[in-house]
Length: 260
Length: 276
Image 1 (tube, rainbow over the protein chains, first blue to last red):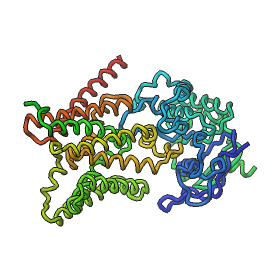
Image 2: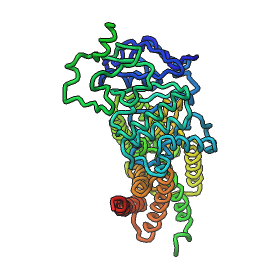
Image 3: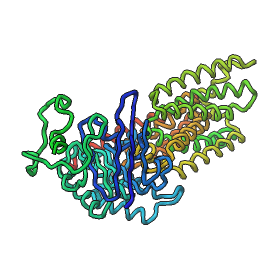
Image 4: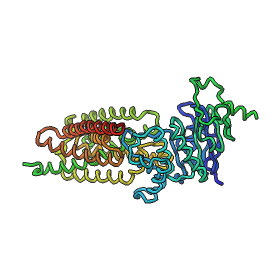
């Protein structure tokens, strides 16, 4: 088994603010890792620095044994950002955006191959957007746009999927679709690293959870098991306007597990 | 007499077609990258290049290409560093380029700011056969580069982080699009002038956006709108005896207004159908 990501002492400082404070994290092939934590805990920064998209200010990170600057097998990586960028208002169809996911597999100056077309069609099919392929992405709902982003990563047929908050602000239908897509990936032995605020329907798929708090790793191991009303099917997680930082910065279930 | 009877008008028409094709093609990527004003920034910087041409006795177009390209690289590097926001970086170059051009032309013996007029506002009818070869060569180079790198530029201009996570040479591509834009500005300078050059990169794209659904058709139709504006503007300026640069830009803007109306109407009737 090879190691997809290997970060040692990873630090990120942006405008003098420490976002990550010395993270050690290894993700092996086939793992399904959830990165959890409150808003501003550094989850997104962590996954973006695993990919080299966000440069480290200290420590090292390796992608399949190589630092991001010297990594060449980018087709192995499928990155799903938080939001679809609308590109300055220039229209783009669902198919165009999904097809751009093939870029790491395409040679410069070559025409689109039949393998490219097949992969794009399969990716659209998988997220249930085949019938919207010709529509501009800007006409889609937030959940559908999230599916476009996932289809773009699927189209590249990568080994590793890195998803930044795929469930944030997504309708129930798209969440279910996402869970189905992810379980398909897990069955096929793909490696998945996903950032989430809430796991929701993704919970059964996760093999390991990493919890961040204020830029530090406070938990790395078994995923949380929901208790009480959280465990009920269809439970809708609503925080009635409580100021998050006033709470204990570490989720209670983490403390419980650490003590155990 | 028709415009085809005159040599200078034939040259001007060929130049108009090339400018009408290249400026919106580059512009589609620039607008997608949210740098719609990049062309303006480069245009102002190019003025310093033009003035340097007068001062040194070199061809103003050549010095303009070099200085504009350097300016574009500077804008891209400031933007990529992220220390100064893109629009402030552009603004600094606007002022520096314009002031530099005026100062250098003042210091050039026998020249005054009046010498800059044809570069500021365009003089497409002054294009001779040598100019035409230069313009054609640059236009072909720009379109060829866009064809080769188009797929990568699409990803870069859509989302730079995704481009990086796809292993694309982000820094190189950013510089490439900046340099392509600066060459285009200098090519289009003869048609509409440095102060209006960006209009041909942005307005046809904005026009297409009202009517199209895909990136590909937006680029293709903006090139059509671009040629309609440059050729239509040039022709009508000849018969009406008005300045060509301004006519071209006003025609492009009129096209935008019409497209805006049509786009609204089409979208309204579409939503009407879906709710009915």
